[in-house]
Length: 394
Image (cartoon, rainbow, N blue to C red; front, top):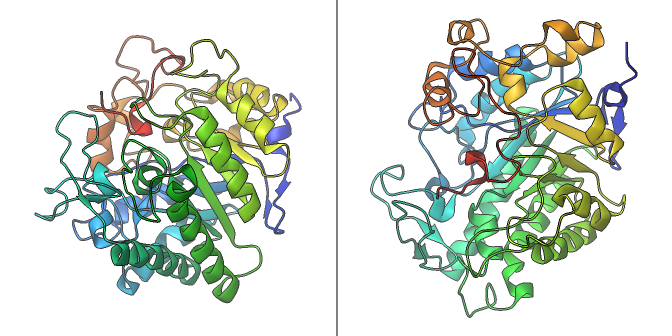
């Protein structure tokens, strides 16, 4: 068998050890009950994929009632959800796989239908540049402070539920990113205006979560942060802004950074003269001071190994682990020939894919999931364009 370094263990600076360097990327299942409770389908979905990757990051859970972003999301807004979160964590933590709960507030990326008539909120009353976007209400300062507390309380619930860490979803144009962005944040108080002020909210969330972990979690409980490298809007986040944010996150001593990008080799969407892959540029800024989880259209063991050889410490697989839950095990058993790179709709039940997620995969996500019933798909579809999961709906 080829020597794959991604099968080797990894130790975070806080002491948490992974059995291998494969991470299952956070992916929406669309399968929770309307009130945020977890369904048996979701538990089975995670159980089917537990045991292989070194770490699994869950679909995102909202921390505030007005932070729900879409139907079928599970919730971390109240202690009544701890038993549900416990089921998810337990399902994942087989054979040493670590479980991380991704948490967020959707901000203006939600809508009044999802929020049952409540207006969306954001840093400022500016609608997103996407079809059907609603104009949000600007958050008051007390509301901002409460959302910071909500992130802390959700982290405590993750600890009580048995997770090994939390990941702050600061990507895909959700609320943490909305405060950083000059497009969505037009505030003139301490939470907006200058770049330093626009970073105040996400850094305050990081600090609050760290306080909760220090007081209630183990020393190996992880805090990760996911980031989108750039925005299409003008004004909007550019790579230089992201690099400055990374410097602040390094100083804040989080445990890892996770990039949200559709293709691991993609270059800047805004600066066409910059031909260096974004991930490569991020690694240079990180300078080995913080591990980066890379993601984006990697499918084969060779794809993953190349990313490792290019400097990544950890690699996340998303769609490939939907198609092939046993990807890691098959590589370990020298059985790469049996790895599925397409998926048949007749296999959905066998693969424990929830019914609501099946609908999503065969409609909105049809071109990305590689259905065997369709024409041969391209693995480079997002090399020059954004993927749906990145939050852009042009």
